[in-house]
Amino acid sequence: MPNENLTYRDYARFARLSDEDLARQCEAEAFHASGPGGQGVNTTDSAVRMRHLPTGITVTSREQRSQLQNRQSCLRKIRQQLELRSRRPKVRKATKPSKAARQRRLDAKHRRSDVKSNRRKPGFDD
Picture 1 (cartoon, rainbow, N blue to C red):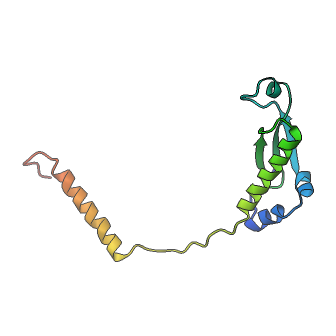
Picture 2 (spheres, one colour):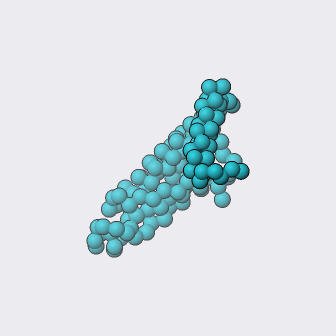
């Protein structure tokens, strides 16, 4: 079960691992690929699904006819995901709308109200 409390620093640590160490932390499964390819696809277990156990990242590769090449492709995809998740999150700053923006919003509401009130039958008062 992957740890849900991983930070970007944890992902960065995993991304710096060598290919061999990263592969040791993964669980790989070979299966029949679906789709175009005919006999080559239907008879061999060349597609690979790989799961990085500490993080729970799962990738699939079926681009090549070779299981070994698909395993390498899965490792590449896992490394890309780790690098993507290892980026420091942007610091968010609380902001509030300006006076002009607030006034534009109120003006738009008033215009919309006028449009709706003009749809009523003449002489209809609330």
